Image (cartoon, rainbow, N blue to C red; front, side, top):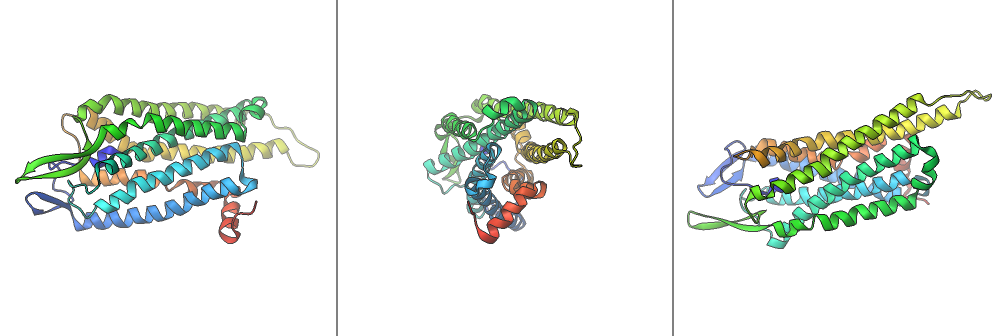
Length: 329
């Protein structure tokens, strides 16, 4: 997310209005679109993900190994929304090149962004693997797909990312830019030359985007093939329990696949921008495309509760009970 915090005076005029030679501000239309869309996403995203976290944690009938991972994704999404949208709304009325945060605040926000995004990516990969074991190797599921194991994996993911992403605290901060017309500007950006970060970016791109997508694609293809080929047998009662079980499992798989697909699609503009700017001689910093990429990231962190309600009848019932009666264990 640090591209969103690294602006220079070489930005094009689209989306900008120039007040003074040394100050460049967002245009009124840009501000209006940014504030309205971001506020709506923040509001519904926080309500949805907080509801998911509470329901899946405290509602006894919703507790399962898969839902442990979904709680982790919801917590990560809340953290993404707070660490990206809140600073963005705060800075939208400021000079594009000025940061009013202290250096530690700048570093902390970027650290939280990477922490939450990378934790979400690894959690998505983990619950995909868990579903693959549960469906393709059901005999192993009794020991491998348990709530206690899921909790341990989730804790491990967050501890790993807390340590792995800590380098951003030292790699970013407030940097004085200028002089411009005799004054310096405080910018929340990289402490060192940007090209020195290319290896870090590409490693992150592979570890938290490419590899998870390739792995989850393989896992869900195997899951679907297993469910399609699984034999069905009739019963005297006229209802096929295996067919009903396969249908239930397929509903869960569809929901989880939708989470993965949207994660890939909505993060693609930002990831593509990151790769391009890592190799291009001149960074691409068109404000409207940056806004589009940012909004896609925001939507990704707010849309999962909508998916759960749209694709799972069990979730819909749980959400309805939660908002009407609260959580009852």
